[in-house]
Amino acid sequence: MPRADRFISPERFEELRDIRAHEPHRIAEAFAGREKRRLLSDAGRLFIVAADHPARGALAVGSEPMAMADRYDLLDRLALALSRPGVDGVLGTPDIIDDLALLGALDGKVVVGSMNRGGLRGSAFEYDDRFTGYDIPSIVRDGLDFAKTLLRVNLADPATSDTLEANARAVSAAAAARVPIMLEPFMSRWENGSAVNVLDADSVITSVAIASGLGDSSAYTWMKLPVVEDMERVMAATTLPTLLLGGDRATDPDATYAAWERALGLPGVRGLVVGRTLIYPPDGDVTAAVDTAAALVHAPVDA
Image 1 (tube, rainbow, N blue to C red):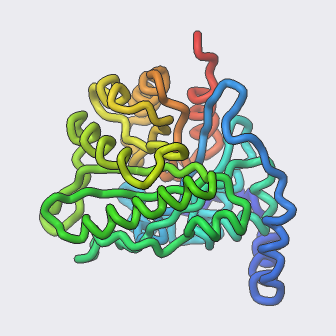
Image 2 (cartoon, rainbow, N blue to C red):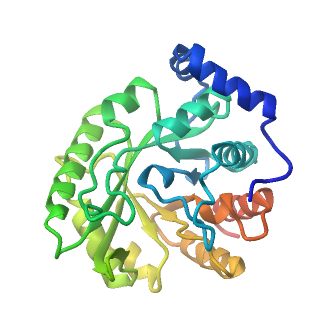
């Protein structure tokens, strides 16, 4: 359900449509004039809101199958989130990032370009996760700050090998361009015709080992990992800077926040990357959800 109180006015949204139709060159101008910032806060932390799900055909949030389909509503929620203190940036595909640039929502923010969206949700080729979004040259072109890839490893699906190779090339290109790149790895399997990620500590550790070795340099590689039981063992498996992913919307937000808080205290964890859980919270209060997560990420280390 779209939010009743709009952060972006209807007039501003219609202006966005008109710019896209009549003045597309203004997208490049918006990137060229964007105010940039350091990647990490003074405390070495980072809180990113994510919205790259639609490009894989993943529009559902909880029991709402088309929750993310309304682009005005999605942009409105993202712009509101980005306006809140403690929100350091956004992760998205070019269509969303271009819209936010035209809206002036990216100034002073970390911008993460999502690269491989070809493994469409529910498709027979889901593990053949082609790089259909950003590549490293376009991330450099637009002056973005970070790259992101998804790496689902299904040992029973031959398409995984092509996806591994594509991710390795992306890591090498990012290192050559000195662009930080976060890999989101999972051990995964087919289950009743659907791709299902395996979320136990041993599987996450295995996925980290595989992803960490990709490319000809790991100098700019980061991990983006789910919060699972025995997270201490997961973080003991890598020296790479790690961001925690929020996952699907939870029925018990308080339990989710508590799990994030515990994991954020582990060595090597640098922050959160969260999408639907915060942008579409169960009670509809985006501001409260985002502010709660920001407070967890940016809490004093000795608190």
